[in-house]
Length: 101
Image 1: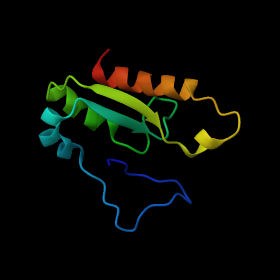
Image 2 (image 1 turned 90 degrees about the vertical axis):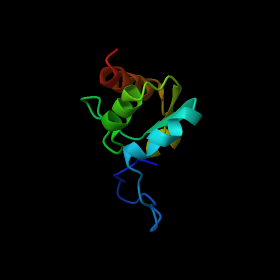
Image 3 (image 1 turned 135 degrees about the vertical axis):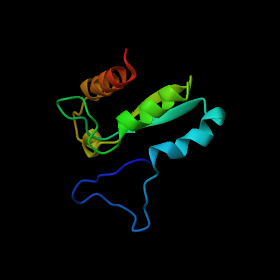
Image 4 (image 1 turned 45 degrees about the horizontal axis):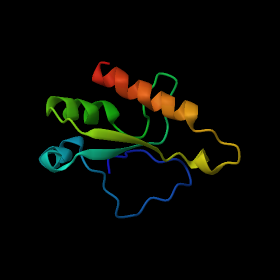
């Protein structure tokens, strides 16, 4: 719901409008876990398609104590022989750095 950038050839609904990270604040009292989807993490451990720093900082500022469930959505996840382990590890490093762990 926060994705901002799409790769060439990726389907994007013509009616798609991304949410602003602040839109999650009124929902937080009712949410105990979120799917923390990610698509592309660069060599500096930044997600290039989703404003993770903003989102995670909001969760931290709001003292949200729920769970984040990493979910890789990259197009190469369907490639034969693809191994998600290193990609998942990069996502965890990204989150730890932003959250200060």
